[in-house]
Image 1 (cartoon, rainbow, N blue to C red):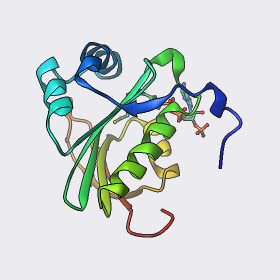
Image 2: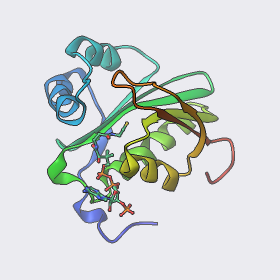
Image 3: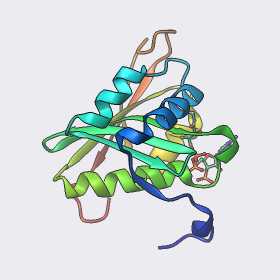
Image 4: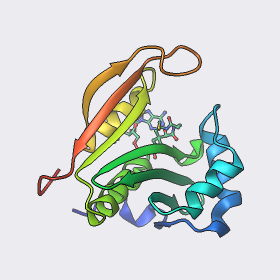
Length: 153
Ligand SMILES: CC(C)(COP(=O)(O)OP(=O)(O)OC[C@H]1O[C@@H](n2cnc3c(N)ncnc32)[C@H](O)[C@@H]1OP(=O)(O)O)[C@@H](O)C(=O)NCCC(=O)NCCS
């Protein structure tokens, strides 16, 4: 169902190699342990990856191997947060994964990131496990999974 603020959402589309500079900027603005330009280039070049951009303010990177997918990166510039862009990127990735025949989507999220955890729970993900000391700074990860095999996840 369309949301009241849909008219404000930047267009979401698959990224191309031409988006590499913008993607690098978004990645660095979103994560202290940012992916290198080379890693981003690989994501844009190799099949299996799904790279989406929301205008110039948001991005999502995932991939699938057969029926299993992973969402690895999701970021929205600080000044554009809280408008539903992150949630819409996740929704769009799930639709795209479904077209690829994916039945399960996994992700890891920092235990100290309640905004992201809530966003994923609202998108239908379930918290299935906790990985101790998963991140370099010792923070735990929540492992989350979404079942895409049901008609309306
Ligand atoms: C997580 C992230 C992608 C969310 O993007 P977003 O566009 O703000 O997401 P949404 O607007 O769809 O949802 C954000 C939710 O947090 C809420 N929120 C609470 N405090 C907020 C704040 N200070 N800023 C933004 N949103 C806030 C929003 O109201 C919204 O909840 P709602 O759906 O109940 O209204 C963004 O915060 C981000 O880039 N963070 C840094 C990178 C990161 O942590 N990525 C996720 C880990 S993989």
